Length: 266
Ligand code: DGL
Image (cartoon, rainbow, N blue to C red; front, side, top):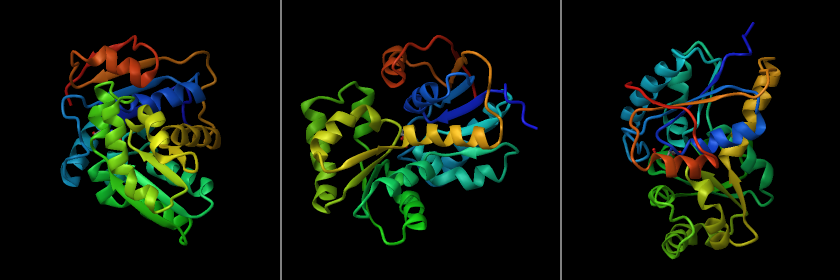
């Protein structure tokens, strides 16, 4: 029997995973959340699968020491490259963002022409493509690595002329394929939602993996009867480095100020 009052661990390569925390706070306000951001080593999206897998295990080991009942890999890059290997080593359930994002895309798409954007590692892993084709083998999946969206979101430049130019460059080939759904397969991309929607046009529906993941976590807690029935939950944030830009960035990703933050070594 799971002790439902234990916290949920949320792990990301940096602060971007706070977009997943934001969706979790909205969907599950009674849960206690422990967030780990590996800010000293971010980005993961440009690293090799082997290194990402090692970093993922190190972060997960730290979160396990905080007695979590469930681990959410909020990072698309980690979920795409390291989830099965990690899940086989842990004694608690692990949920990633790829399966919920793929599920959302398959439910939303009518034409079966689906676009995916993510970091270079996420796109190279083909994890979204596999997850979509497992559900709907008739689909056509078009992928585009979009690494420059990450620093644009971190810089607070998500609604600038530069962001529009970058979005046109990345999304042009996907739009030309007449996709009807575009999956935002990276923690940072929800911040660029208006810019991406503007470039994609009104006929393309954007699927945000953060929101889909929060819904999946809710279903999991329900089916395992491990939902916290207490009052308002808490949020503890652990980072491997606290950069000077932390307060501004965290506020933008989370949509509210972060009250408790501590530095940890992995
Ligand atoms: N968190 C990563 C993701 O969702 C983006 C940042 C990085 O490259 O580490 O893929």
